[in-house]
Image (cartoon, rainbow, N blue to C red; front, side, top):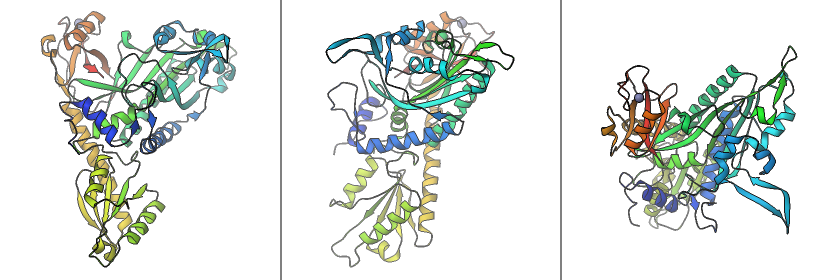
Length: 475
Ligand SMILES: [Zn+2]
């Protein structure tokens, strides 16, 4: 098969081609922007969801599921939120042949579905905090070019919604979400930068928004998630009140945390290479692929040994596939490199006779394992693989940011830029015009690179009150 397009110079062509060849999605469904989850892609998605569920539940969040249809009357209660989603919602206006009395919105996100019910659930300070999440499909009528996993019209969406007693508790929840995301991203071997969005770019209805961004080549970035503090912006119109210990009625403070299959797109985009996808072990549909190498000349059939090893590894909780297809070994090696399996175990007649296996990981490390302690050696090799995958991603991540000290330097940027910004909106827009993109905002908390002291604001030259900001071209 022809080589993949060059990832460095033709990223999007490479991305689309690699998804197609690795059979992670099928774009041939009859609605643009709504793709089919293939068996291989669905396994990856299920593993990704397991990581999200594990980490969010560790923070005390519990799962719920709300209906997909929202009455227009509820949807319209928070004005900014409506304005933000107005052009993107799908409407259900008929039931059979009759027009509905109240049209229904197919949820683009679930604030307006959940909050009328939260007003019934929350009565007293004893009901707080309310931390719930759901993983459901949401729908947005995208007008931009759709891309599998990155921009779709039916979104596989993780959304946490919380109610807190006050501003301090809401701020703590935002910090807890960010901490949970650090664990999620680490499981995916993905370095990222949390960025507080400027006011003109926050989520509709939010008091502030923290986005989780990654660089994806040259000056482009991808937002892979977001955390919002709503303060009382939604609890006021939806009447979510609680009684304090001293008998007063007070509005709750709310937060949300949203993620989607973009994370899977990010895994492909960040770790993939000229040979195809590279899955971190946490999401790999198969962590280990066992390839028996059958030869007409050999006296030992390696297939029983391959099957025995596979079931032993499966019993230890690994996801294993034995590739017993008719193809030549070379074709199988090629396929599993393309599809991103972290570790391949080749078993020929020699290995079968010894009870050993030749292990080759997706980053090229090759080792003869066993016969003693073979399963333990496989587990250890997967751990080493994740460490090296993360280190490789971190090196790429750090190289993706460079500082700029003048507006002139932003023109034709070939990396994401770190700039001095005085936080005035006019200067922010001047920076956006210069890079022909967006001022993503200011890094929040710990970031995986050295920032050092800022220079003057690129917009006005002021030196007082200048912060670091990130300028890029978001995908
Ligand atoms: Zn300025």
